[in-house]
Length: 338
Image (cartoon, rainbow, N blue to C red; front, side, top):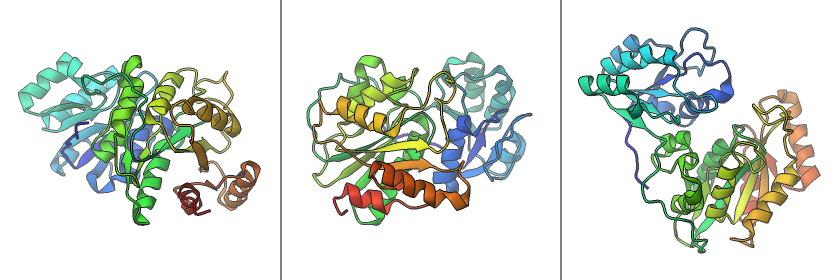
C-alpha cells in the first residue's frame, strides 16, 4: 500500500447536505483528526454543523487552508454540478481538492484545466493500487479483528479506530487498517475496497493486513453489510480476505431498516454473527465474535446504560458505545481476559 500525503489544514466541504449519514467523511476527519481541520463550508440549504469555524473559500484561503476536502457524498458518489463553482474557486485560491467519491476529480476536464493553471492538485482517494492479486486464502501471521455491521454508516470505522486506540493505550501492539476513503484520509494509507474489481476484493483485503508479528493485532475497518442488497459483495470479499480471528458486530440503536432501502429490514445481531462465522470459517475456523458495538446517538442519555446492559444479557456478549461508554470489556474478551 502507498501512503498518501495531503496538505493541511483542511476546509471540510459538505455541499447542500442535510443528512448526517452522508457527511461521514467530514465528520470522521473532524472527530479523529481535529488538529488538521480549520473549518467547514456548506452551500445554500446545507444544515450539517461539525462545530468548526464556518468559512467561505476566500476566508478559508486567507486563514491558511491548504486543501478543500469533499466531506460528503450521496449514493453513487457523483459530484453535483452545483458544487463546481466552489471547487473551481478553491483551485484558483491555491487549495488542493481531495475527494473519495466514485467520480474522479481527474476525470472532470474543467477541474483539470483550472488545477493545471493554478498549480493546485486534484487528489482522488478512491483509486486502488494497480496489480492487486487474486486472494490466496493463505494463512497469515499476526492477529486480526474486523468490524462487521447490520448496515452501512453506523459505526464500523469509529469502532475500529476506537479499538485500535485503546489497545495501543493498554500497551498492545495494534494498528488501524483502513478500507474506505475516510479511514484512508485518517490513517494515511489503505485500500478503498469498494473501488476494487470484484475478482480482486479478497486479494485487496489480504494486502490491507499482511503478515505481521505473532502478537500484533490489525484492527480492520469493515464495509457495508453481509445482508445489504447493494453492498454485500464488498463485505463478503473483505471478510474472506481479512481472515479475522475476531469480529465485533456494529449496529445502531432504533434503526429498523437498511438505510436508503426501506423495503429491507435490518438483520438481527444473531443473524449477522451466524452469517459472518459461516462465511469466514472457510479461511479461519477459529473466528469468534467478541462483542457488540452500538451507536446509541438515538437513545436518551438516561436510557443508554439500561439499553446496553439488556443487549449484553440478551446475547451474552460485552456491549458498548465506543465513543461514550468505553470498550474495555470488549478488549478484555478479545484478549481472553474475561
